[in-house]
Image: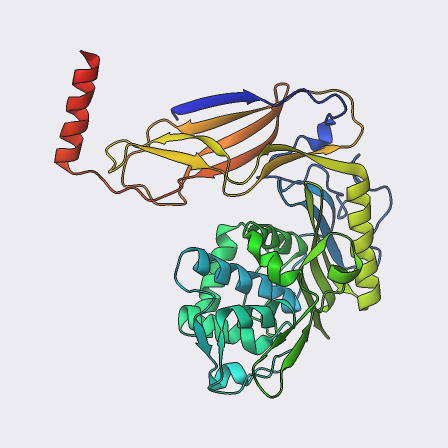
Amino acid sequence: MHTTRYRRWVRPLTTLALTAALLASAAAPSALAEESSAGRAKPNAPQTDLTGSARSAILMDADSGTVIFEKNSTLALPPASITKIMTMLLVMEALDEGKIKLTDKVQTSEHAASMGGSQIFLEPGEEMTVEDMLKGVALASGNDASVALAEKLAGSEEEFVKQMNEKAKELGMTSTHFVNCNGLPAQGHVSSARDIALMSRELLKHEEITKYTGLYQDHLRKDKPKPFWLVNTNKLVRFYSGADGLKTGYTGEAKFCLSATAKRDNLRLIAVVMGEPNTKTRNAEVSKLFDYAFAQFTNVPIYKKGDTIGTLQVQKGSVAKLPIVAKHSYSVLVRKGDSKGDIRHELVLDKKVTAPVEAGKQVGKLIVYRGNEVMNEFPIEAPASVARAGWWTLFKRSAGKLFLND
C-alpha cells in the first residue's frame, strides 16, 4: 500500500515513559489488562482485584482505548439498561448528521407508552422534544422514552434494533446481540463489559452527551400542571469528583450494572461493572477503579479536538484536497513518574485516494511511537464526502498543472 507520511515529535517528557506493557495499540488495547481467565495479572494492572463482587469488569482510557484492568471482560451477560448507551449513540449520530434536531417533536406511540420498568410515564399521543426524551433516557433510564426515540429515528423499534446491531458489529462488539433498545429482559439480549466500554468510548466522542448524562437532576413537562422530576440513577455524578456519566442498569437477571465515566485534567476514564449485588457495592467498586487509575496514570496529548492533522489528496475528486481536522482528542496513556522518554507521532495517509470518497471511510492512520516501538494506532477517516469531478474540472486542473510546470 502506498502511503503519505507526516512525522512530528512530541516534546521530550522528563518524567514520563512507558513500560513494555503500555505499548498497546487501539486495535488491541489490552496490554495493561488483567488476564483474569488465566489467573495472571499484567505488570501494570492492580495487584488486587478491585471488583471482587462483580461478575465482570473493565477499566479503559477513553482517548487511547488502552485497557488498564479487566476481569471476565468478554463474558456475555444481560446488560439491562446499559443497552441505552447504544440508543443514545445512534441518537447523537443522527443529530450530528442533521437527520433530527433537538427541538424536533417526538410523538409517543401506544407501543412506547406500554413499556414497564423505569419510565417517564409517557401517555399515548404525548409529544416531547428530542432533547427532553434524551434527558428522560440519560437521567431516568426511561424505557418508554427509549422506544419513542427509536421509532422517531427508524420508524419502528425493530428497525432501530437492526441499526443497533449493525453499529455494534462496526465497533467490533463481538459478544453483543441486541433484541430491544432499552434493555428490558429478553432471550438472547446480551453484551459484555468490553463491548460496553467500546460503545461508551464511541458515545463519548460526542462530547455534548455529558451535558445530559452528567446532570444530577432536572424536570420534564415544566410548563404543565404536574412537572416530572428527573433524578439521575447514577449517583456518582454527584458524589465522585469528575464523574459525568454514563448509564446504570438493573434487572433481576442482570443484577446491578454500571458504565461510568470520569474526567480529571486531560485523563478521561471508562469503568464498566456487571452483575454487582447492590448499588452501594457497584458504586464503591467503580470508585476504586477510578481512584487507582487517577493515582497511577496520566495522558500525553497528541492532538486536541479541532487541531489540523494533515491534508488528504483526492484524485479525480470535485475537490483535490481535504484538510483533516481532529474530531476528538488523541492522546496516549503513560504511568506517572516514569523515567524520561521521547514520544513522536506519524500521520500515514493512503497515497492513492480516488473519488468518489465517502465521509467516514478510513484513509490512513495516526501512529504514536516511543522510540521505535508503537504505542497506539488511531484510524483516520475522510472528513467529508467527495464526488468524482466532471471532465471539465479535470481538464482545467490538468491544464493548470501544465502552466505551473512551465
